[in-house]
Image (cartoon, rainbow, N blue to C red; front, side, top):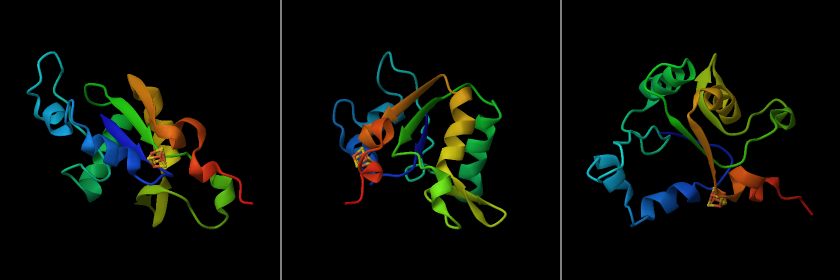
Length: 132
Ligand code: SF4
């Protein structure tokens, strides 16, 4: 399972961490019957970081591996509104952040299923609110 976090508060991640039935550690341990073993690639919870974490994303985007579910947390930004800056990024390329929406664009066509979790991912949420 590849989890991409974009524009949000990470509260969806916190909700999953607080789930009790089943608990995330039970899902990841592979101890539950009738549920396949899950490897989680997550920007905060992955054991790997830096280039090794990004290598997992790159491999999945190339279609390598056994297939994956893609979970998107947070809203995906319109990068045209970033001006010379940037919004939510995961990793760097040539010294510039790689936008989260680029990862979603590359990974979604390869995923067996895509899950938008929370109102930020499904309808924009707070980042899409109008400024009064
Ligand atoms: S939907 Fe958005 S605001 Fe709500 S918990 Fe998830 S990331 Fe945070």
